[in-house]
Length: 470
Image (tube, rainbow, N blue to C red; front, side, top):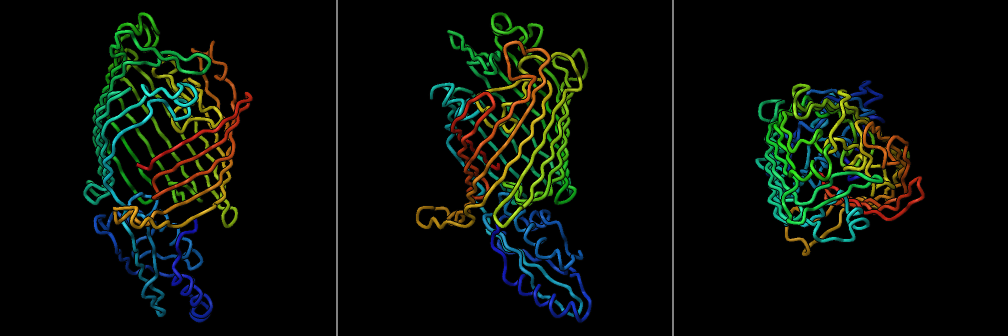
């Protein structure tokens, strides 16, 4: 993803390196001022906080072009802008001081939408395992605002019916006081069908004949965040959880759903997370690395309804190999430090969300611990804008950023299951899969993938994936 590079940067760098450098010995520049244009809604300080330089910084000439391009891509990857550019202005050749001008074109921030989504873990499960069952569809209304007051603050409201009845409010304000931010979360859901056991690494579901509610989940909480600089961020989350199942679940389906025949569990929840992210274009990384650590404590003591202490870590690395060729690698591991038996409901490992090995999209591997490794080689087919003109009524979205890539993936994983393994052959063994894919990224937020994946147990097939940077 090369993007749009200003000819002024190239020309000025050529002049300084061929003439001035030889005359006065300067091999650096000092940033004197930074001005921002095009931010009608977004506050200036939100944009500047994404930069890894500030006014007064000294930058080596040999690094200047690359630093400018990396920061331009960081702005686009926030999802707040369709376009960004950074130009050098007012280069004082006597003092080698420069001014930078940041130009942005803001995205559309308000996304009211009708919910019509699948209740299963992925389209592939619904398609291949549930036979296109439209009873397993959620519908309702959702509102996302990605920049509610211009401070990069995100609001999410959900009113959902169908397979899962869900009501959710979440609001996050990243800059309440200096580097500190905060947020609130309110969530309730219920289901009349329940996944109560895993057999042959596939979840078994059951709905009672009178369609009674089988599962209810509720949580409330708040979050504190700290953004130390453009790369380092921390989060501390406090929540109260209350989950309950109908009495028929422990009595007839699985006595260990919450362990020891419990119908409900109540517990406090504390989570800490720290991320150091130096990836170039984090939405679809082209270079750099990421370090991630997370710790979750559920319950206060051994006598709590649910008592667990889980830690996880992740490292990612990306490198540009040639003009349009990129390589990437991810390694993630999770472990439960309290080695007590877990209830079935709290024993998930591989097969959920991003923690899935390609080729095993139809399977889950439960367990208290896991490790997963992912590698990919990507070739950029297209990087540019497609004008939608009269087809798009929203002015800010008339020029659609489009990135099209061909990708080959190879992945492996291992789930450590100490209790529920007798009918699940994929647990406690290394699984390997992967295959070719086409990735389509639209508006720097929406990623769609068509993949043909293989696994080591002799299966292969077409899989469709999608994700959103909300």
